[in-house]
Image (tube, rainbow, N blue to C red; front, side, top):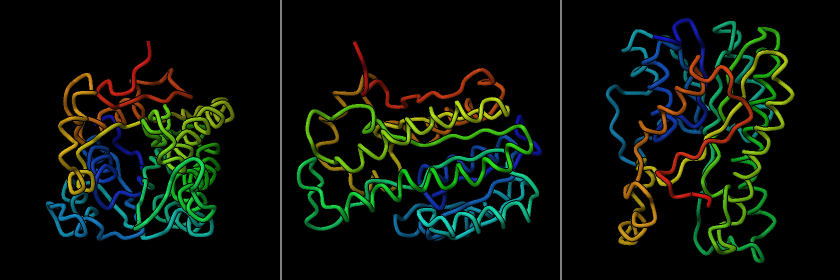
Length: 264
């Protein structure tokens, strides 16, 4: 119960990886705020909950929880969310910036040459700008406390080119998340705040499973461990970064990809 008495916010935690992070933090003793643009998003992907809502799942563990439906790509909404959190709990100890994704639509061209300005802005807003807004809002309270842990969720897509120009907006946004983490860590380190990021690879979340196709088995041959990861395996790395296990770790981006991204 290393996180007893701590207050954590996980963005994009209505389902999938975000929900796994939130539940894991609650298992470690934290009170957890659930944020999503749709707090019922698990229903969209037929993700089974153990209670009617993620908040109630956490409360069933004996923890406090609060659900805030807000679009974190909107700075005013983020500022309002943190005002509500601080008014309700009085502090914020852990921030996990999970909201985002490479959301797709019909007929989109995401190549490095042809991605439209509108598409680039949208992907940047939901992945990079959302993380920046939340980090800025959380930093003020954490600096006053002179303590805090921030974990930004990047992606293996932001660590290498994929050997083609595809998914350029997403790759660029997630690379930005990793580098913003380094810059923020340098600024907040003197206040006792650790800032790190993880870069998940192919993880079997409810959305990934829905769109997994016959190419999946071929892809696993490129993963050193020969399988996709689970949300719980990614959550264990979050545990490392928000507990005393990583007291002397900051400004880092840890790939969680089973060896899919490798150097050398």
